[in-house]
Image (cartoon, rainbow, N blue to C red):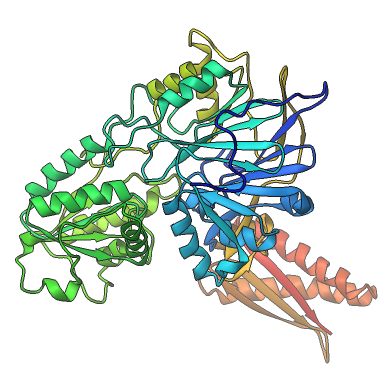
Amino acid sequence: MTHPEQTPRNPQPGPESSDAHLEVIPLGGMGEIGKNIFAYRFGDEIMVVDGGLAFPDAHQMGIDLIIPRIDYLQQHAALIKGWILTHGHEDHIGGLPYILPRLPKVPVYGAPLTLGLVREKLAEFGVKDGDVDLREVGLSDKVRIGKNFHVEFIRMTHSIPDNAGYILTTPVGRVLHTGDFKLDEHPSDGKLSDLPRIEQAGKDGVLLLISDSTNAERPGRTPSEAEVAKNIEEVIANCRGRVFLTTFASQVNRIQNILHIAHRLNRRVVMEGRSMLKYAQVAQALGHLEAPDPFLTNEEVGELQDQQVLYLCTGSQGQPMSVLSRLAFGTHAKIALRRGDSVILSSNPIPGNEEAVNLVINRLYEIGVDVYYPPTYRVHASGHASQEELATILNLARPKFFLPWHGEPRHQINHARLAQTLPRPPKRTLIAKNGDVVRLGPDEFKVTGTVPAGAVYVDGLGVGDISDEILLDRVSMSQEGILIMTAVLHPSPHVEIVSRGFVRANRDLDNQIRKVALEAIEGGVREKKRLEDVRDDMYGAVRRFVRKVTGRNPVLIPMIVD
Protein backbone atom coordinates (compact mmCIF):
# COMPACT_ATOMS: atom_id res chain seq x y z
CA MET A 1 0.00 0.00 0.00
CA THR A 2 1.18 3.51 -0.70
CA HIS A 3 0.82 6.54 1.53
CA PRO A 4 2.16 10.09 1.29
CA GLU A 5 4.09 9.29 4.46
CA GLN A 6 5.69 6.13 3.03
CA THR A 7 9.37 5.93 3.85
CA PRO A 8 12.40 4.77 1.87
CA ARG A 9 13.18 1.05 1.85
CA ASN A 10 15.84 1.14 4.58
CA PRO A 11 15.61 4.35 6.59
CA GLN A 12 18.69 5.00 8.67
CA PRO A 13 18.85 6.93 11.92
CA GLY A 14 19.76 10.48 11.09
CA PRO A 15 22.46 12.60 12.68
CA GLU A 16 21.80 13.54 16.25
CA SER A 17 23.10 16.29 18.47
CA SER A 18 24.98 15.40 21.64
CA ASP A 19 21.84 15.84 23.77
CA ALA A 20 19.32 14.34 21.34
CA HIS A 21 17.17 11.68 22.93
CA LEU A 22 13.95 9.75 22.53
CA GLU A 23 11.46 9.55 25.38
CA VAL A 24 9.66 6.22 25.72
CA ILE A 25 6.58 6.73 27.90
CA PRO A 26 4.31 3.77 28.81
CA LEU A 27 0.93 5.17 29.85
CA GLY A 28 -0.62 1.71 30.31
CA GLY A 29 0.29 -1.95 29.98
CA MET A 30 3.57 -1.74 31.90
CA GLY A 31 3.64 -3.76 35.12
CA GLU A 32 0.14 -5.01 34.32
CA ILE A 33 -1.77 -6.96 31.68
CA GLY A 34 -4.27 -4.69 29.95
CA LYS A 35 -4.96 -1.08 28.85
CA ASN A 36 -1.87 -0.94 26.66
CA ILE A 37 -0.80 2.46 25.37
CA PHE A 38 2.65 3.86 24.58
CA ALA A 39 3.86 7.34 23.74
CA TYR A 40 7.17 8.12 22.04
CA ARG A 41 8.41 11.69 22.10
CA PHE A 42 11.29 13.20 20.18
CA GLY A 43 11.60 16.96 20.48
CA ASP A 44 8.27 18.53 19.64
CA GLU A 45 6.72 15.36 18.15
CA ILE A 46 4.77 12.52 19.77
CA MET A 47 3.76 9.18 18.28
CA VAL A 48 1.23 6.98 20.12
CA VAL A 49 0.83 3.20 20.01
CA ASP A 50 -2.45 1.38 20.83
CA GLY A 51 -5.19 2.40 23.24
CA GLY A 52 -6.55 -0.54 25.18
CA LEU A 53 -8.74 -1.30 28.16
CA ALA A 54 -8.61 -3.66 31.11
CA PHE A 55 -11.33 -5.52 32.94
CA PRO A 56 -12.02 -4.92 36.63
CA ASP A 57 -10.83 -7.15 39.45
CA ALA A 58 -13.28 -8.64 41.92
CA HIS A 59 -12.70 -5.79 44.42
CA GLN A 60 -13.51 -3.09 41.82
CA MET A 61 -17.22 -3.45 42.40
CA GLY A 62 -19.62 -2.07 39.83
CA ILE A 63 -16.86 -1.06 37.41
CA ASP A 64 -17.50 -2.06 33.80
CA LEU A 65 -14.15 -1.23 32.20
CA ILE A 66 -10.82 0.41 32.99
CA ILE A 67 -9.07 2.68 30.51
CA PRO A 68 -5.71 4.46 30.79
CA ARG A 69 -5.30 8.05 31.93
CA ILE A 70 -4.31 10.25 29.02
CA ASP A 71 -3.55 13.48 30.88
CA TYR A 72 -0.08 13.60 29.33
CA LEU A 73 -1.46 13.27 25.81
CA GLN A 74 -4.13 15.90 26.45
CA GLN A 75 -1.54 18.30 27.88
CA HIS A 76 0.64 17.85 24.77
CA ALA A 77 -2.13 17.24 22.24
CA ALA A 78 -0.65 19.64 19.67
CA LEU A 79 2.52 17.53 19.48
CA ILE A 80 0.77 14.27 18.51
CA LYS A 81 1.60 13.48 14.87
CA GLY A 82 0.21 9.98 14.46
CA TRP A 83 -0.92 6.73 15.98
CA ILE A 84 -0.25 3.07 15.20
CA LEU A 85 -2.23 0.02 16.28
CA THR A 86 -0.63 -3.40 16.66
CA HIS A 87 -3.73 -5.64 16.64
CA GLY A 88 -7.42 -5.89 17.41
CA HIS A 89 -7.60 -7.27 20.94
CA GLU A 90 -9.58 -5.30 23.53
CA ASP A 91 -6.50 -4.65 25.67
CA HIS A 92 -5.00 -2.77 22.70
CA ILE A 93 -7.97 -1.05 20.99
CA GLY A 94 -10.84 -1.23 23.49
CA GLY A 95 -10.14 2.19 24.99
CA LEU A 96 -10.06 4.06 21.66
CA PRO A 97 -13.76 5.10 21.69
CA TYR A 98 -13.04 6.93 24.95
CA ILE A 99 -9.59 8.22 23.96
CA LEU A 100 -9.71 9.35 20.31
CA PRO A 101 -12.60 11.85 20.70
CA ARG A 102 -10.58 13.63 23.41
CA LEU A 103 -7.53 14.21 21.22
CA PRO A 104 -6.81 15.88 17.87
CA LYS A 105 -7.59 14.04 14.64
CA VAL A 106 -4.34 12.48 13.43
CA PRO A 107 -3.55 9.54 11.11
CA VAL A 108 -4.17 6.18 12.82
CA TYR A 109 -2.42 3.28 11.07
CA GLY A 110 -3.40 -0.36 11.43
CA ALA A 111 -3.92 -3.59 9.52
CA PRO A 112 -7.32 -4.21 7.87
CA LEU A 113 -8.80 -6.48 10.56
CA THR A 114 -7.59 -4.20 13.33
CA LEU A 115 -9.18 -1.15 11.75
CA GLY A 116 -12.32 -3.11 10.89
CA LEU A 117 -12.80 -3.88 14.57
CA VAL A 118 -11.96 -0.31 15.54
CA ARG A 119 -14.62 1.01 13.15
CA GLU A 120 -17.20 -1.29 14.74
CA LYS A 121 -16.31 -0.07 18.22
CA LEU A 122 -16.33 3.60 17.23
CA ALA A 123 -19.70 3.20 15.51
CA GLU A 124 -21.18 1.75 18.72
CA PHE A 125 -20.16 4.97 20.48
CA GLY A 126 -21.50 7.23 17.76
CA VAL A 127 -18.05 8.30 16.52
CA LYS A 128 -18.42 9.08 12.81
CA ASP A 129 -15.92 8.02 10.15
CA GLY A 130 -15.17 11.65 9.42
CA ASP A 131 -14.13 12.25 13.02
CA VAL A 132 -11.15 9.90 12.74
CA ASP A 133 -8.43 9.32 10.16
CA LEU A 134 -7.99 5.54 9.92
CA ARG A 135 -5.40 4.35 7.39
CA GLU A 136 -4.88 0.71 6.44
CA VAL A 137 -1.38 -0.73 6.16
CA GLY A 138 0.01 -4.12 5.24
CA LEU A 139 2.18 -6.07 7.64
CA SER A 140 5.41 -5.15 5.88
CA ASP A 141 4.52 -1.54 5.07
CA LYS A 142 6.51 1.47 6.17
CA VAL A 143 5.03 4.81 7.14
CA ARG A 144 6.48 8.10 8.25
CA ILE A 145 4.92 9.92 11.19
CA GLY A 146 6.05 13.48 11.60
CA LYS A 147 9.69 14.25 10.81
CA ASN A 148 11.27 11.87 13.30
CA PHE A 149 9.34 8.59 13.34
CA HIS A 150 9.73 5.96 10.61
CA VAL A 151 7.63 2.87 11.33
CA GLU A 152 7.99 -0.51 9.65
CA PHE A 153 5.29 -3.04 10.51
CA ILE A 154 6.36 -6.67 11.05
CA ARG A 155 4.07 -9.69 10.96
CA MET A 156 4.00 -11.59 14.28
CA THR A 157 1.85 -14.62 15.01
CA HIS A 158 -0.61 -14.23 17.87
CA SER A 159 -4.15 -15.38 18.64
CA ILE A 160 -5.69 -12.94 16.17
CA PRO A 161 -4.88 -12.30 12.48
CA ASP A 162 -3.27 -9.08 11.25
CA ASN A 163 -1.07 -8.88 14.34
CA ALA A 164 2.01 -6.69 14.10
CA GLY A 165 5.20 -5.72 15.81
CA TYR A 166 7.19 -2.81 14.43
CA ILE A 167 10.61 -1.30 13.94
CA LEU A 168 10.68 2.36 14.88
CA THR A 169 13.57 4.24 13.36
CA THR A 170 14.34 7.55 15.09
CA PRO A 171 17.20 10.08 14.98
CA VAL A 172 18.86 8.31 17.94
CA GLY A 173 18.48 4.69 16.82
CA ARG A 174 16.10 1.82 16.20
CA VAL A 175 13.46 0.54 18.58
CA LEU A 176 12.10 -2.96 17.96
CA HIS A 177 8.72 -3.62 19.58
CA THR A 178 7.46 -7.20 19.28
CA GLY A 179 3.84 -6.41 20.10
CA ASP A 180 1.91 -9.37 21.50
CA PHE A 181 3.28 -12.54 19.94
CA LYS A 182 4.16 -16.19 20.04
CA LEU A 183 6.35 -17.97 17.48
CA ASP A 184 3.73 -20.43 16.25
CA GLU A 185 5.41 -22.77 13.78
CA HIS A 186 2.05 -24.01 12.48
CA PRO A 187 -0.30 -21.00 12.51
CA SER A 188 -3.85 -21.52 11.29
CA ASP A 189 -3.42 -19.09 8.41
CA GLY A 190 0.03 -20.38 7.48
CA LYS A 191 1.61 -16.94 7.98
CA LEU A 192 4.73 -17.13 10.14
CA SER A 193 6.32 -14.40 12.23
CA ASP A 194 8.82 -12.42 10.15
CA LEU A 195 11.93 -13.60 11.99
CA PRO A 196 14.27 -12.87 9.04
CA ARG A 197 13.32 -9.19 9.29
CA ILE A 198 14.00 -9.18 13.04
CA GLU A 199 17.36 -10.85 12.43
CA GLN A 200 18.24 -8.23 9.81
CA ALA A 201 17.26 -5.47 12.23
CA GLY A 202 19.60 -7.04 14.77
CA LYS A 203 22.44 -6.95 12.25
CA ASP A 204 21.65 -3.34 11.38
CA GLY A 205 21.61 -2.45 15.07
CA VAL A 206 18.72 -2.39 17.57
CA LEU A 207 19.16 0.23 20.23
CA LEU A 208 16.13 -0.86 22.27
CA LEU A 209 14.01 -4.01 22.33
CA ILE A 210 10.53 -3.84 23.87
CA SER A 211 9.19 -7.38 24.18
CA ASP A 212 6.09 -9.23 25.40
CA SER A 213 6.68 -10.63 28.92
CA THR A 214 3.33 -12.33 29.58
CA ASN A 215 4.69 -15.88 29.68
CA ALA A 216 8.22 -15.13 30.84
CA GLU A 217 7.80 -17.59 33.71
CA ARG A 218 6.89 -20.50 31.43
CA PRO A 219 9.70 -22.72 30.15
CA GLY A 220 9.78 -24.12 26.64
CA ARG A 221 7.49 -23.03 23.84
CA THR A 222 3.81 -22.09 23.78
CA PRO A 223 1.76 -24.83 22.07
CA SER A 224 0.70 -24.19 18.49
CA GLU A 225 -2.88 -23.52 17.42
CA ALA A 226 -2.55 -26.67 15.29
CA GLU A 227 -2.11 -28.74 18.46
CA VAL A 228 -5.10 -27.04 20.08
CA ALA A 229 -7.24 -27.78 17.01
CA LYS A 230 -6.21 -31.44 17.10
CA ASN A 231 -7.19 -31.72 20.78
CA ILE A 232 -10.51 -29.94 20.26
CA GLU A 233 -11.37 -32.25 17.37
CA GLU A 234 -10.65 -35.33 19.50
CA VAL A 235 -12.97 -34.04 22.23
CA ILE A 236 -15.81 -33.13 19.86
CA ALA A 237 -15.52 -36.46 18.02
CA ASN A 238 -16.32 -38.24 21.30
CA CYS A 239 -19.28 -36.01 22.25
CA ARG A 240 -22.63 -37.79 21.89
CA GLY A 241 -24.98 -34.78 22.05
CA ARG A 242 -24.96 -31.07 21.36
CA VAL A 243 -21.65 -29.27 21.79
CA PHE A 244 -21.37 -25.76 23.24
CA LEU A 245 -17.91 -24.27 22.76
CA THR A 246 -16.79 -20.92 24.13
CA THR A 247 -13.58 -19.06 23.39
CA PHE A 248 -12.53 -15.45 23.03
CA ALA A 249 -14.53 -13.88 20.21
CA SER A 250 -11.30 -12.41 18.87
CA GLN A 251 -9.69 -15.86 18.50
CA VAL A 252 -10.43 -15.74 14.78
CA ASN A 253 -7.83 -18.35 13.84
CA ARG A 254 -9.18 -20.79 16.41
CA ILE A 255 -12.74 -20.15 15.34
CA GLN A 256 -11.69 -20.88 11.76
CA ASN A 257 -10.25 -24.21 12.90
CA ILE A 258 -13.45 -25.03 14.78
CA LEU A 259 -15.54 -24.34 11.67
CA HIS A 260 -13.43 -26.82 9.71
CA ILE A 261 -13.66 -29.35 12.55
CA ALA A 262 -17.46 -29.01 12.64
CA HIS A 263 -17.60 -29.56 8.88
CA ARG A 264 -15.46 -32.69 9.08
CA LEU A 265 -17.57 -34.09 11.94
CA ASN A 266 -20.88 -33.27 10.21
CA ARG A 267 -21.95 -30.64 12.74
CA ARG A 268 -23.68 -27.39 11.79
CA VAL A 269 -22.57 -24.26 13.61
CA VAL A 270 -24.76 -21.79 15.46
CA MET A 271 -23.13 -18.57 16.68
CA GLU A 272 -24.57 -17.07 19.86
CA GLY A 273 -23.44 -13.81 21.46
CA ARG A 274 -23.12 -10.26 20.17
CA SER A 275 -19.32 -10.03 20.29
CA MET A 276 -18.93 -13.46 18.67
CA LEU A 277 -21.17 -12.39 15.79
CA LYS A 278 -19.46 -9.00 15.46
CA TYR A 279 -15.95 -10.43 15.22
CA ALA A 280 -17.09 -13.14 12.81
CA GLN A 281 -18.80 -10.63 10.50
CA VAL A 282 -15.76 -8.34 10.35
CA ALA A 283 -13.35 -11.27 9.88
CA GLN A 284 -15.52 -12.78 7.11
CA ALA A 285 -15.78 -9.45 5.29
CA LEU A 286 -11.99 -9.13 5.28
CA GLY A 287 -11.31 -12.72 4.24
CA HIS A 288 -9.94 -13.95 7.56
CA LEU A 289 -12.81 -16.34 8.24
CA GLU A 290 -14.38 -18.79 5.83
CA ALA A 291 -17.39 -20.90 6.80
CA PRO A 292 -17.46 -24.24 4.94
CA ASP A 293 -21.20 -24.42 5.73
CA PRO A 294 -23.57 -21.49 6.26
CA PHE A 295 -24.20 -20.59 9.92
CA LEU A 296 -27.57 -21.60 11.29
CA THR A 297 -29.79 -19.80 13.79
CA ASN A 298 -31.08 -21.59 16.86
CA GLU A 299 -34.51 -21.79 15.23
CA GLU A 300 -33.04 -23.62 12.21
CA VAL A 301 -31.50 -26.54 14.12
CA GLY A 302 -34.82 -28.05 15.20
CA GLU A 303 -34.79 -30.82 12.63
CA LEU A 304 -31.15 -31.79 13.25
CA GLN A 305 -30.11 -34.50 15.67
CA ASP A 306 -28.16 -33.41 18.74
CA GLN A 307 -24.90 -34.86 17.44
CA GLN A 308 -25.20 -32.64 14.36
CA VAL A 309 -25.10 -29.31 16.22
CA LEU A 310 -22.27 -27.16 17.56
CA TYR A 311 -22.88 -23.84 19.29
CA LEU A 312 -20.08 -21.25 19.30
CA CYS A 313 -20.90 -18.87 22.12
CA THR A 314 -19.60 -16.09 24.32
CA GLY A 315 -18.84 -16.53 28.01
CA SER A 316 -15.26 -17.79 28.26
CA GLN A 317 -14.65 -15.44 31.21
CA GLY A 318 -17.85 -16.14 33.12
CA GLN A 319 -19.38 -12.78 32.23
CA PRO A 320 -22.82 -12.64 33.91
CA MET A 321 -24.76 -11.67 30.75
CA SER A 322 -22.83 -13.89 28.34
CA VAL A 323 -24.49 -16.80 26.57
CA LEU A 324 -22.66 -19.50 28.55
CA SER A 325 -23.48 -17.90 31.91
CA ARG A 326 -27.15 -17.62 31.00
CA LEU A 327 -27.14 -21.26 29.88
CA ALA A 328 -25.44 -22.33 33.10
CA PHE A 329 -27.97 -20.50 35.28
CA GLY A 330 -30.99 -21.37 33.16
CA THR A 331 -31.81 -17.80 32.14
CA HIS A 332 -31.31 -18.08 28.38
CA ALA A 333 -34.55 -17.22 26.60
CA LYS A 334 -34.28 -19.82 23.82
CA ILE A 335 -31.82 -22.57 24.80
CA ALA A 336 -31.63 -24.88 27.79
CA LEU A 337 -28.78 -27.25 28.60
CA ARG A 338 -29.58 -30.87 29.36
CA ARG A 339 -27.82 -34.11 30.18
CA GLY A 340 -25.95 -35.43 27.18
CA ASP A 341 -24.75 -31.97 26.14
CA SER A 342 -21.05 -31.12 26.24
CA VAL A 343 -19.46 -27.76 27.03
CA ILE A 344 -15.89 -26.93 25.97
CA LEU A 345 -14.13 -23.91 27.48
CA SER A 346 -11.33 -23.17 25.01
CA SER A 347 -9.75 -20.48 27.17
CA ASN A 348 -8.07 -19.72 30.46
CA PRO A 349 -9.51 -17.20 32.93
CA ILE A 350 -8.02 -13.72 32.74
CA PRO A 351 -6.55 -12.86 36.18
CA GLY A 352 -9.46 -11.65 38.31
CA ASN A 353 -12.05 -13.78 36.48
CA GLU A 354 -11.20 -17.11 38.10
CA GLU A 355 -14.08 -17.01 40.58
CA ALA A 356 -16.67 -16.19 37.90
CA VAL A 357 -15.40 -18.97 35.61
CA ASN A 358 -15.33 -21.52 38.43
CA LEU A 359 -18.90 -20.59 39.36
CA VAL A 360 -20.07 -21.26 35.79
CA ILE A 361 -18.16 -24.57 35.62
CA ASN A 362 -19.71 -25.75 38.88
CA ARG A 363 -23.19 -24.88 37.64
CA LEU A 364 -22.55 -26.84 34.44
CA TYR A 365 -21.56 -29.88 36.48
CA GLU A 366 -24.73 -29.54 38.57
CA ILE A 367 -26.85 -29.55 35.40
CA GLY A 368 -25.20 -32.80 34.41
CA VAL A 369 -23.47 -31.82 31.17
CA ASP A 370 -19.95 -32.96 30.28
CA VAL A 371 -17.44 -30.15 30.76
CA TYR A 372 -14.02 -29.91 29.12
CA TYR A 373 -11.56 -27.19 30.12
CA PRO A 374 -7.82 -26.69 30.66
CA PRO A 375 -5.54 -27.88 32.09
CA THR A 376 -7.26 -31.29 32.26
CA TYR A 377 -7.99 -31.04 28.54
CA ARG A 378 -5.52 -29.20 26.30
CA VAL A 379 -8.18 -27.27 24.43
CA HIS A 380 -6.51 -23.87 24.80
CA ALA A 381 -3.09 -22.36 24.25
CA SER A 382 -1.85 -18.92 25.12
CA GLY A 383 -1.26 -16.37 22.41
CA HIS A 384 1.96 -15.26 24.10
CA ALA A 385 5.52 -16.54 23.80
CA SER A 386 7.20 -18.71 26.44
CA GLN A 387 10.85 -18.59 27.46
CA GLU A 388 12.34 -20.38 24.44
CA GLU A 389 10.56 -18.03 22.03
CA LEU A 390 11.47 -14.96 24.08
CA ALA A 391 15.10 -16.02 23.97
CA THR A 392 14.87 -16.42 20.18
CA ILE A 393 13.76 -12.81 19.78
CA LEU A 394 16.49 -11.54 22.10
CA ASN A 395 19.14 -13.54 20.24
CA LEU A 396 17.96 -12.33 16.82
CA ALA A 397 17.51 -8.68 17.78
CA ARG A 398 20.73 -8.39 19.81
CA PRO A 399 19.54 -5.15 21.46
CA LYS A 400 21.82 -2.79 23.30
CA PHE A 401 19.05 -1.99 25.78
CA PHE A 402 16.00 -4.00 26.85
CA LEU A 403 12.57 -3.00 28.20
CA PRO A 404 10.37 -5.97 29.25
CA TRP A 405 6.72 -5.04 28.67
CA HIS A 406 3.19 -6.49 28.74
CA GLY A 407 3.21 -8.27 32.06
CA GLU A 408 3.05 -7.87 35.79
CA PRO A 409 6.31 -7.10 37.67
CA ARG A 410 7.10 -10.78 38.16
CA HIS A 411 6.82 -11.35 34.40
CA GLN A 412 9.01 -8.36 33.59
CA ILE A 413 11.68 -9.37 36.12
CA ASN A 414 11.77 -12.98 34.94
CA HIS A 415 12.07 -11.75 31.35
CA ALA A 416 15.00 -9.55 32.40
CA ARG A 417 16.67 -12.50 34.14
CA LEU A 418 16.19 -14.64 31.05
CA ALA A 419 17.92 -12.00 28.94
CA GLN A 420 20.96 -12.08 31.22
CA THR A 421 21.43 -15.83 30.70
CA LEU A 422 21.89 -15.50 26.94
CA PRO A 423 25.25 -15.45 25.14
CA ARG A 424 24.87 -11.77 24.28
CA PRO A 425 22.80 -10.10 27.00
CA PRO A 426 21.60 -6.49 26.68
CA LYS A 427 23.96 -3.89 28.09
CA ARG A 428 21.18 -2.63 30.35
CA THR A 429 17.62 -3.64 31.19
CA LEU A 430 15.00 -1.48 32.88
CA ILE A 431 11.88 -2.58 34.74
CA ALA A 432 9.59 0.37 34.06
CA LYS A 433 6.19 1.36 35.41
CA ASN A 434 3.29 3.21 33.85
CA GLY A 435 4.10 6.91 33.72
CA ASP A 436 7.87 6.48 33.70
CA VAL A 437 9.71 8.68 31.22
CA VAL A 438 12.47 6.47 29.83
CA ARG A 439 15.19 8.57 28.21
CA LEU A 440 16.87 6.75 25.33
CA GLY A 441 19.99 7.79 23.48
CA PRO A 442 22.90 6.03 21.76
CA ASP A 443 24.60 5.56 25.14
CA GLU A 444 21.78 6.46 27.51
CA PHE A 445 18.90 4.41 28.91
CA LYS A 446 17.35 5.53 32.17
CA VAL A 447 14.19 6.78 33.83
CA THR A 448 14.39 10.55 34.15
CA GLY A 449 10.93 11.44 35.42
CA THR A 450 7.27 10.57 35.50
CA VAL A 451 4.03 11.79 33.94
CA PRO A 452 0.45 11.21 35.13
CA ALA A 453 -0.66 7.63 34.51
CA GLY A 454 -3.06 5.18 36.00
CA ALA A 455 -6.64 3.99 35.70
CA VAL A 456 -9.85 5.71 34.66
CA TYR A 457 -12.93 3.76 35.68
CA VAL A 458 -15.92 3.38 33.38
CA ASP A 459 -19.11 2.76 35.35
CA GLY A 460 -22.29 2.81 33.29
CA LEU A 461 -22.30 6.11 31.43
CA GLY A 462 -19.79 7.64 33.81
CA VAL A 463 -16.17 7.91 32.71
CA GLY A 464 -13.68 8.96 35.37
CA ASP A 465 -16.24 9.94 38.01
CA ILE A 466 -15.45 6.89 40.19
CA SER A 467 -12.35 7.25 42.37
CA ASP A 468 -10.38 4.72 44.39
CA GLU A 469 -12.00 6.17 47.51
CA ILE A 470 -15.46 5.36 46.13
CA LEU A 471 -14.34 1.81 45.34
CA LEU A 472 -13.09 1.46 48.93
CA ASP A 473 -16.51 2.62 50.13
CA ARG A 474 -18.16 -0.01 47.94
CA VAL A 475 -15.90 -2.71 49.36
CA SER A 476 -16.62 -1.51 52.91
CA MET A 477 -20.36 -1.51 52.28
CA SER A 478 -20.19 -5.02 50.85
CA GLN A 479 -18.22 -6.29 53.84
CA GLU A 480 -19.62 -4.31 56.78
CA GLY A 481 -22.89 -2.80 55.56
CA ILE A 482 -24.13 0.77 55.78
CA LEU A 483 -25.72 2.80 58.58
CA ILE A 484 -27.50 6.07 57.79
CA MET A 485 -28.27 8.44 60.68
CA THR A 486 -30.55 11.41 60.17
CA ALA A 487 -30.73 13.90 63.05
CA VAL A 488 -33.62 16.38 63.07
CA LEU A 489 -33.01 19.34 65.43
CA HIS A 490 -36.43 20.99 65.53
CA PRO A 491 -38.86 21.17 67.18
CA SER A 492 -36.88 18.84 69.46
CA PRO A 493 -33.79 16.79 68.56
CA HIS A 494 -34.40 13.20 67.48
CA VAL A 495 -32.55 10.66 65.37
CA GLU A 496 -33.75 8.23 62.68
CA ILE A 497 -31.68 5.22 61.66
CA VAL A 498 -31.67 3.14 58.46
CA SER A 499 -29.23 0.25 58.01
CA ARG A 500 -28.56 -2.21 55.20
CA GLY A 501 -26.22 -5.19 55.35
CA PHE A 502 -25.19 -4.30 58.91
CA VAL A 503 -27.01 -6.54 61.37
CA ARG A 504 -30.35 -8.32 61.50
CA ALA A 505 -33.17 -6.05 62.69
CA ASN A 506 -32.35 -5.32 66.35
CA ARG A 507 -34.55 -2.82 68.13
CA ASP A 508 -32.36 -2.70 71.26
CA LEU A 509 -29.20 -1.93 69.26
CA ASP A 510 -31.02 0.72 67.20
CA ASN A 511 -32.23 2.41 70.38
CA GLN A 512 -28.74 2.39 71.86
CA ILE A 513 -27.30 3.95 68.69
CA ARG A 514 -30.02 6.60 68.72
CA LYS A 515 -29.20 7.38 72.35
CA VAL A 516 -25.46 7.76 71.63
CA ALA A 517 -26.14 9.95 68.59
CA LEU A 518 -28.69 12.08 70.45
CA GLU A 519 -26.31 12.70 73.35
CA ALA A 520 -23.64 13.91 70.94
CA ILE A 521 -26.11 16.21 69.19
CA GLU A 522 -27.54 17.69 72.39
CA GLY A 523 -24.04 18.35 73.67
CA GLY A 524 -23.09 20.13 70.48
CA VAL A 525 -26.27 22.23 70.50
CA ARG A 526 -25.70 23.28 74.12
CA GLU A 527 -22.18 24.37 73.23
CA LYS A 528 -23.53 26.21 70.15
CA LYS A 529 -21.21 24.40 67.78
CA ARG A 530 -21.46 24.70 64.02
CA LEU A 531 -23.76 22.14 62.40
CA GLU A 532 -20.76 20.57 60.65
CA ASP A 533 -19.06 20.03 64.00
CA VAL A 534 -22.23 18.62 65.55
CA ARG A 535 -22.47 16.17 62.66
CA ASP A 536 -18.85 15.13 63.14
CA ASP A 537 -19.40 14.63 66.87
CA MET A 538 -22.36 12.36 66.15
CA TYR A 539 -20.34 10.43 63.56
CA GLY A 540 -17.40 9.88 65.93
CA ALA A 541 -19.52 8.88 68.90
CA VAL A 542 -21.58 6.36 66.92
CA ARG A 543 -18.53 4.88 65.19
CA ARG A 544 -16.78 4.27 68.50
CA PHE A 545 -19.92 2.76 70.03
CA VAL A 546 -20.70 0.47 67.09
CA ARG A 547 -17.12 -0.76 66.91
CA LYS A 548 -17.10 -1.49 70.66
CA VAL A 549 -20.47 -3.25 70.74
CA THR A 550 -20.41 -5.16 67.44
CA GLY A 551 -16.76 -5.25 66.40
CA ARG A 552 -17.85 -3.97 62.98
CA ASN A 553 -17.11 -0.88 60.91
CA PRO A 554 -20.10 -0.16 58.69
CA VAL A 555 -20.04 2.81 56.35
CA LEU A 556 -21.64 5.60 58.43
CA ILE A 557 -23.52 8.43 56.73
CA PRO A 558 -24.51 11.18 59.21
CA MET A 559 -27.01 13.86 58.19
CA ILE A 560 -28.43 16.80 60.14
CA VAL A 561 -31.67 18.58 59.30
CA ASP A 562 -31.94 21.94 61.05
